[in-house]
Length: 77
Image (tube, rainbow, N blue to C red):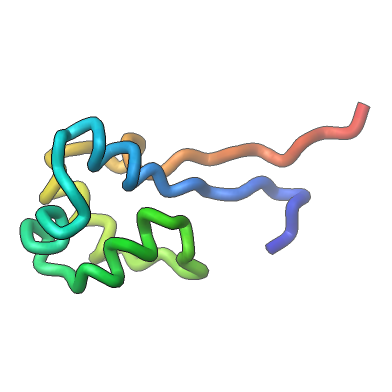
């Protein structure tokens, strides 16, 4: 990953906690493998799957901006 362009953070773990759920419940609601949910919670994803993001947003009743956050690159001064 090129740090000159910033990166995306997946805020799934925080969102699950805020909703009072756990990873297993989310995997069931989203019809996903628990390991895949775990990897998204740990930000251990190299390529985002738009279908998975749609499933997570539907299961958590949230917007995509609740789940993904763009972190800009640090600028030298």
